Image (cartoon, rainbow, N blue to C red):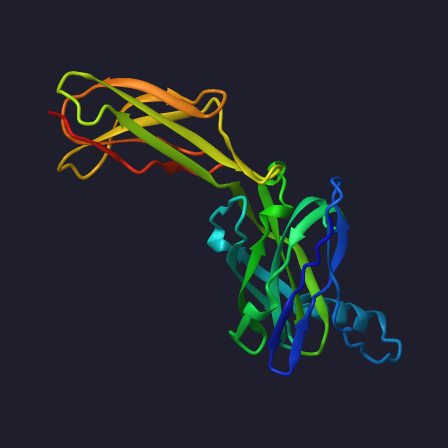
Length: 289
């Protein structure tokens, strides 16, 4: 499949329309590109400087070279994506240049190299708002939208955050890897305690199911072999207490028994894994007679 990531922003008279990120294609056939919407300005040629002058210029250029100093997506927190709805998250990016920065925008990508075997999502052009921090430095904020229909289960891992920018003079510059952000598969957890009501001292059966987004199929599938805590909150209490730990079956189901002792809420709580966020079921209240 093929997508096109586009960077677009307006900062003063300068429009950032699709900053320069090279086209790339992943092993699975997915590809993405960000095409330049402008051509960087070129300086006129000058006479040949002396060796000393060249050294001075090289030092000055290195010091004054435009650079992207930071780029953070979703505040550094994991991006959790389900199976149907697109997930839009925020970004903040900062760049500096002696000539001033016209704009800067972040993108996220996954793969071995941004030049090839990579896949990513670019910023939503209309969302970008920039503010000059100083004459040389600008910070821009905007959003990036992830489409679950383009994700694979193997994409639930760390993604690189890159950024592209342009100076007020029209010079394009970028940085492929500024920071990282984790992308996770949305999880769901249910609980049911029965019978309701129940006599004190009798057995309660507590069932539930842990599922997570399966991006390969666009559905939710049981998460097998996971340790999940069974918790109880007595009526009037402010917090839950862990009673025992139960493991999910091959289909993600949970089932255990406990003795009914008091009125209160029962729930399952999952701590999460690197690919899947933590989740707790809504409490199921049981009246004990």
